[in-house]
Image 1 (cartoon, helix red, strand yellow):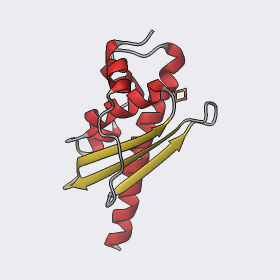
Image 2 (image 1 turned 90 degrees about the vertical axis):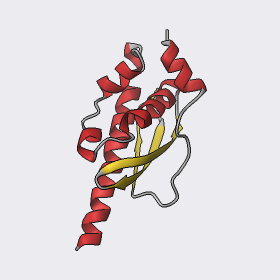
Image 3 (image 1 turned 60 degrees about the vertical axis):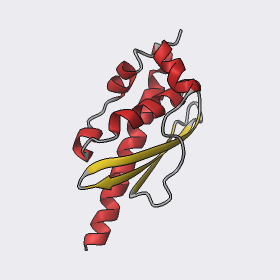
Image 4 (image 1 turned 30 degrees about the vertical axis):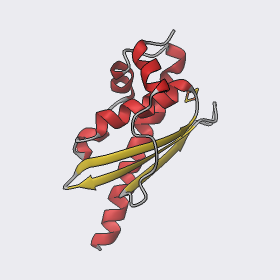
Length: 126
Ligand code: FES
């Protein structure tokens, strides 16, 4: 039911952990399944230079968090914001329809971390 890519990211997730001095942190949860995902980012000159995640959730949620860290690193904030749940699912060579909402969680957590970064820098600038 899952692609090899999903199984690979689930059994060997990339960029797991926290960034103590992160520039932005995003946390989202899905009220239906109760899964929670948290993403930390480091940003330099508008580019995501480091990204880590912790996910309390299903295998697909872990795989989508892992793959979104690979998609986002090295991207500008604007490019990273444009990563859709469809792009996450394609990078995993597809997800079963019932598991598509898990990829929303990853895209939303990344957007939330970027928003947090923008809030932090707006406060610093004023
Ligand atoms: Fe909820 Fe996967 S079942 S994120």
